[in-house]
Image 1 (cartoon, rainbow, N blue to C red):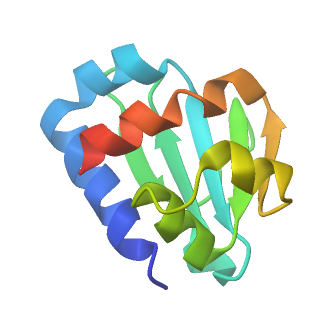
Image 2: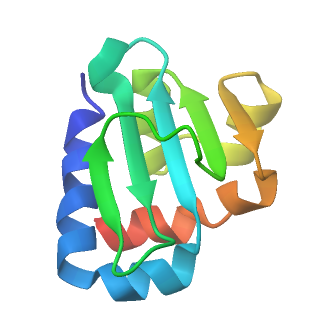
Length: 111
């Protein structure tokens, strides 16, 4: 799964600068990689304390993003626009859609 590198980068970023990322996010994000099985479920908690990033699901996530592995990698690298992915049906969002717009700067901070 190619997006695992992105998840690893997010975990490292939260460990290094979690408090700053919590200020940017202020929510719990759930990523579900549609073709990734159980390994494709990742939670990014930017709501509590200094943040937390881990494999698995959080049923209380504020924003759940479902996307294919290749599309997530393309979006994180800037090759795929989030709005176009959403309009084209490649990206599905459950919960608070406005929170998904905060992900761009968060993903940049994770690089």
